[in-house]
Length: 498
Ligand code: C2O
Ligand code: CU
Ligand code: CU
Figure (cartoon, rainbow, N blue to C red):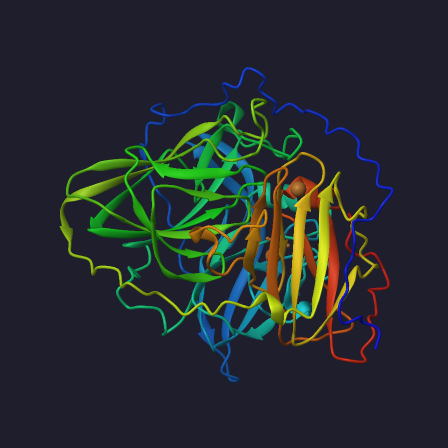
């Protein structure tokens, strides 16, 4: 038995902590970018189409995706070279039901290798689309698995080690919605009508054109000064129902959003990364780090226009307004029709979210994120950083060690937040999560159960979802193993630049 029942991986000593270099994103004056009241909202929001699918002879729902370069006009008459899935920019929304088998054919029509990762999905590591499932140019990768999780807003994006920031920046991303009969029917659920996906991303568009290469920026990576929602610049959306459900995804490389409405109205937070909350949580703001999702339901009155904004994210930056902490953006305008179709009231209970008791944990581990490393080590494709025994529960304590903002993400599992700086989590962290924001000085204890899918040949990743940090090596690999299995690290580093 090679796995100690209780493992405490201490912070590795000897990792010299250099002072974080204050990069171009620093704004000493604390003024930041401010687009409030300056966005014309003159373009209808693009809603990504639902991906067509068919059911094959083995009963699997099959999707065909192709990643390719194309041209996109973010501003009329100014084409940018972009990448997309089944189109020039972003990709269609995949949709599958709990219990369904899916098979996804992912063709790569780019001239470089990439991968496609199903962020938030519980699935075998060989189907995960991480850096060990590279798709060479001109080839197709066809993962298949059974959906074993509750209703949720998941997403997909490339994961080639060292190139993730660039590939996402160019436009490869989309949503993956899981449906579940257990979800309350009162929730708005007509896609594109009262249930709207919002992929929010910051970009720079000098002269109206997206830079072909992700520009370098500050300590957390690229920060843009324009907001795209589903690829639309300055979008509005027509609303025809009293209640509208917005599925928010922070698809940015490094920017933290702190969403609220311009009039500070309250709304219901109904779901986080991995599914519905136990009950709607009434709030007037929701903060999302790169990779995180939230579903909200907002009530509109006939004829009104209200703007979704982002301001004052908690970047832990104090009076030195770096990492975008001082930036304020107008994001999306909601335009309510003069008559709104009635919507059902939200139920008082949304889902069962059984708490995983801390005392059931079989192991505890500590992760320090600092200086592009986790516990002092940078990602190495042929090193397995830790192994987990299948059907066990672990507590992962994560904290930052370098005064910089991080966004911690674990593949395969949905976890629960046990504590934030030693206190019970706030209500918006009461549900299933796969990514959490870690402002400097914050420490979180996360509890997760590793069920299914032991594989001694294929690791899962855990990493910072600030894509620049991830590419720099703030990532590790874990394997889920049956008792007695030994890890076989991938022999070759096929994950680097091709
Ligand atoms: Cu959203 Cu390892 O990724
Ligand atoms: Cu992921
Ligand atoms: Cu980071």
